[in-house]
Amino acid sequence: MTPRCSREELESFRDQVVPDLLPAPGDDRAVRLLFVGINPGLWTAATQTHFAHPVNRFYPALERSGVSGRRIDPAAGMDDGDREHLLGRGIGITNLVARATARADELTAQELRAGAERLRATVRRVRPAVVAIAGITAYRGAFGVRGATPGRQPEGIEGAQLWVVPNPSGLNAHETVESLARAYAEPARAAGLL
Image 1: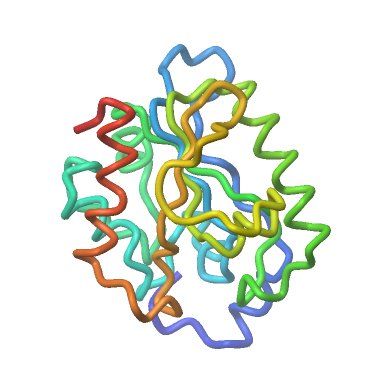
Image 2: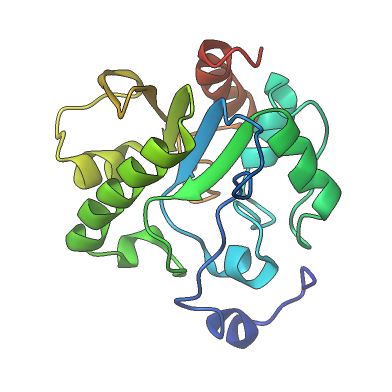
């Protein structure tokens, strides 16, 4: 996949699923910090790499904050070395909803609520210390917490600390790499990664 992928090519990835970035069964590495996206975008589905769109600021923010420990450029698809590096640092990635869409607002309220249950099951299985959901609006819809504010949530999730951090999508124009880096550093500190 190259940055010159046509809109028609991207559309062919609609509704596809991107595997979670988690240790394989039998792998004893612990997930200390589990990042949760809303759902894969079409570029993410095309590259099979979470947060892969070229204007998404997730990886630049992780690098700037010190969370990732190195530069990762996923736009053409993350390589096995990048995946192993993140897993080795105790970082996992999943989504509330598994199916790829062009925009998160294409998801239904029912899909988001089902995604909350899917996430609970993932957290029970993986046992991360901290879960960080990227997107306050999706969090409110998925978990039915209308008045939630960004930051650490008082209720936690399945024994893990629960944080809501800003969505790194380029569509979230009022966030910058710097502001995202500050926001992502907080749950990383809580997970013992910084």
